[in-house]
Image 1 (cartoon, rainbow, N blue to C red):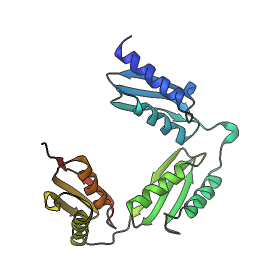
Image 2: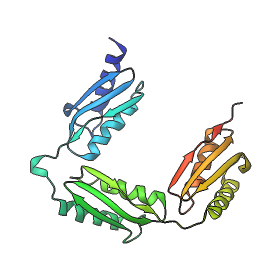
Image 3: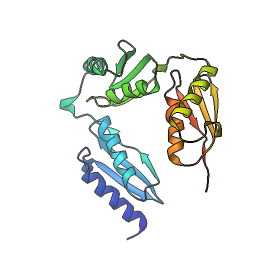
Image 4: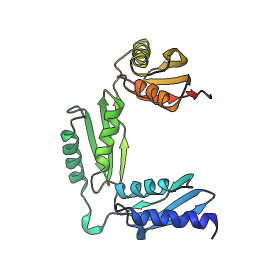
Length: 218
């Protein structure tokens, strides 16, 4: 059996093992570590569960996602029902500020707009809506509300490094451009790098963090 054939079989086995995926509706091909998924899924959540399952398999270097979402004809959910359920689930989520996110639904595609203070709130809103039945696609257009000037963001990140990271904060460079934080320099290990990224993401007004930190070699 060739390497491609073995990888294809391992991915098919993993899809069959995953309870969130109907493996019989999904085709798998493999070539030089790239796995292509085809076929259809009953929901947006199942589509991405299949992708996650494929990425878990040893030897998979990349996944080409070509699965269509096909809702069962007897279970199609009207756009107004999806919109009402999306509004409710966002209201129930204590991590999302009240009345901060607006919902628009058209042909199963949900568009989220509005403003929040933190990047994790933006991601949380999208995650909530992904779980709803009938949703085929989520367009996350929620903006991160700017709260601090670049100098303020730089100072807060430096202070966070001093409090939480074991390394010397001076080895990490911080460049702030609007709400984008660009981290550079070097640290001693992956744990220190993760601490630096967490510190950057914890600052209000940050919507993007670019990681250019190097891990120092012993």
